[in-house]
Amino acid sequence: MTAHIEATSPHVMNTYGRVPIALERGQGCRVWDVNGKEYLDGLGGIAVNTLGHNHPKLVPALQEQIAKLIHTSNYYHVPGQEQLAQMLTERAQMTNVFFCNTGLEANEAAIKIARKYGVDKGIEKPVIVVYDHAFHGRSIATMTATGNPKVRNGFGPLLDGFIRVAPNDIEALKAATAGNPNIVAVMMEPIQGEGGLHPMRADYLKEVRALCDANEWLLMLDEVQAGMGRTGKWFAHQWSGIVPDVMTLAKGLGSGVPVGAVVTHGKAATVLQPGNHGSTFGGNPLAMRAGVETIRIMEEDKLLDHVAAVGEHLKAKLQSELGSIPGFVEVRGQGLMIGVELSKSCGQLIGQAAEAGLLISVTADTVIRLVPPLILTTAEADELVTRLKPLVQAVLAA
Ligand SMILES: *Cc1c(COP(=O)(O)O)cnc(C)c1O
Image: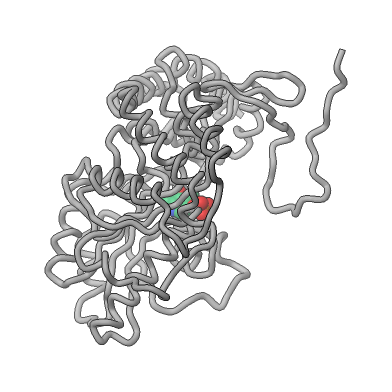
């Protein structure tokens, strides 16, 4: 008999309210903790593990890459950068990419592009429009752009140069920007993730695109969570038919290897010039290989169609199994980016689900977030609902 291993981290800074389990290995959509207990992964490392765990095509490719080169320097060309940039721009109908390592870095670069785009036009104090409930990261600038006061409180002074509007309300956007010559960009998540799984409507995205065109503002979409096939298209905004000027990516792009990207075209593509921006780790050979293989495998295994189908199945199943429980509000989202809103606070579900062998998260206090690996099977989707249902019943009955 193996002794039970306690999951504690007394020397790690206490920045997360952690569930007391420690994970050791994974296979597909399952992970096992240090005591051998199995979990179904409905979280995918928060929309990161695109190809699940220990993927039979990804792992050998990364092993081969590690033996060749992990890191060089942006003093020199990195062939993988051009390869991944080409793959991304082709799928996004855009032209140029900057590589970094995380979501907040990608958004930080987007904010710098917007500001310099304005300054180059003679706007000394550029202003970027952001949204209620937005989440763009935890650096000073991206935290300022974030809507949730809990993320910002205690870290002031915040930055100037942002105004905030309500989502999905074109009149509110017009009113907030009317007569302001300093506006340079509108920045939003096509589906707000941390803010509670709130999609921007397709018609709203089209209206914002037109307003940005009319005023020469950049439309900057934060697809850090919703991009990379998560919704069943390469990028979530593609459901609306628009093309942004700037799009940020990270989370799922490297299937677990840290990689972020800022994808641009048009005027936004040439704003940053040598000396304006950089990253030591950004675009390193290992990260680029992870991105290239993620896209290659997604295509080879036809994962976009799979995500659209299994996502519809999961949503329908959640609706049919949970829909009649008193206190259930709604299920929403697209593909494998799904939110289940309850009528009460349910943060305790994260720990309760882990106990029941299921990894999930809760955002905005009342919304269960499901962002599993994109390889989730229909049978695993059913199992997820089976494990989740009694927990939701118990929370809502309490
Ligand atoms: C997670 C997230 C970020 C921040 O990404 P990090 O890699 O944690 O810096 C930014 N924007 C959105 C929409 C996200 O979901």
